[in-house]
Length: 77
Image 1 (tube, rainbow, N blue to C red):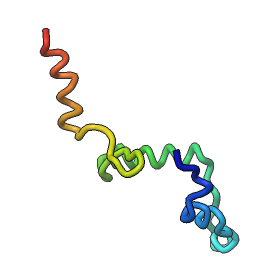
Image 2 (image 1 turned 120 degrees about the vertical axis):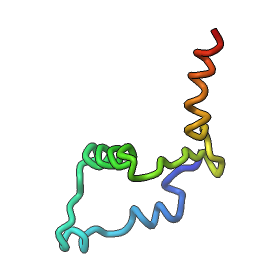
Image 3 (image 1 turned 30 degrees about the vertical axis):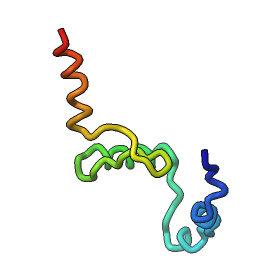
Image 4 (image 1 turned 60 degrees about the vertical axis):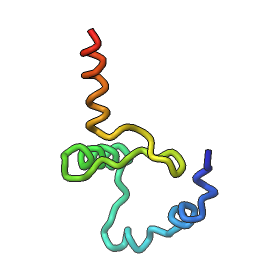
């Protein structure tokens, strides 16, 4: 598993100072608020749901295949 604190792009991103953003009127939002808004945006249909990726390999089924699994289970009798 990769450690986030060793990824150069993430280290640089988290090391950026926020003074200019705060001076411009931006604010730090509570994590719960950010997560709730992000989840809402993903579920309102306006954004495609991203595939879960483990390393470089997409994980999971396409929606039509995912939806077919319970139907096949129910149809087995």
